[in-house]
Length: 82
Image (cartoon, rainbow, N blue to C red):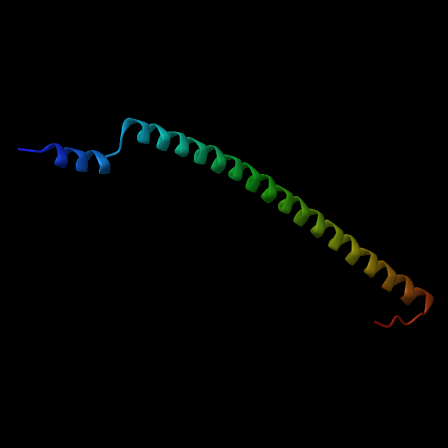
C-alpha cells in the first residue's frame, strides 16, 4: 500500500494540469515564432533570387557594351588595352 510520503514523491515528479497547459502555451509560442521565421526566410530567398536575376541581366548588358566598344575601337583603329 502507498503511504502519504510515497504519494507526495509521485506528485512531485508527475506533471500537473497547469504544467501541461503551460507547456501547450510554450509550444504555441514556438510554433508562431517558427512560422514567422519561415515567412522571413521565404522573403529573403525571393530577394536573393531577384538580385540574382538582376545580376545576370546587368552582366549580359555589360558584356554587350564591351562587345560594342571593341567593335567601335576596331572600326576607328584604336587598340584597347586591359
